[in-house]
Image (cartoon, rainbow, N blue to C red; front, side, top):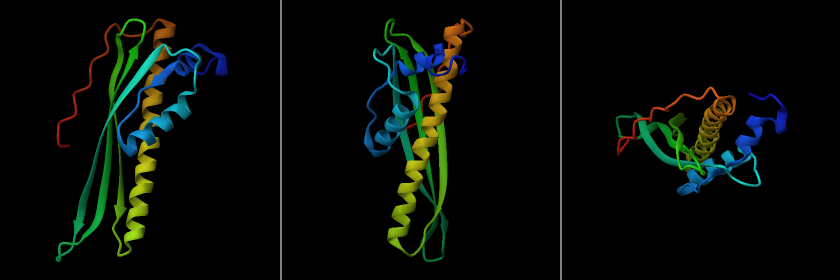
Length: 158
């Protein structure tokens, strides 16, 4: 995949991916992480559309209904679109989650939630970049599948 280093075919293709804006704070974090990993080309040939779905769920509960553990889940549905033809080259989903202890310090809980959000954003970006680079390598080497099966749409409320 990395043949030719930064000037190889895959590196040039990856650098020609423009990341569309993503809503919300997590969207900003994911978009920033994607832009850092993809690099920047002079003329975009592809557009990456990402839609995020997040959930913060209480897990551990004491007898007084106090939550003692939380799980933050982030799911990204993304599509790689060829700008010249409008064809969807890749339609997939990336998922990451993290668990956090809920302690008596509100500051510590907020800091843990923000750190989890930042870490999950980077993990999602890593998964997306890996899949995009693999797909672009396949297309530059002529080994791309004829049709890419679409990932199931995220269910609302999840």
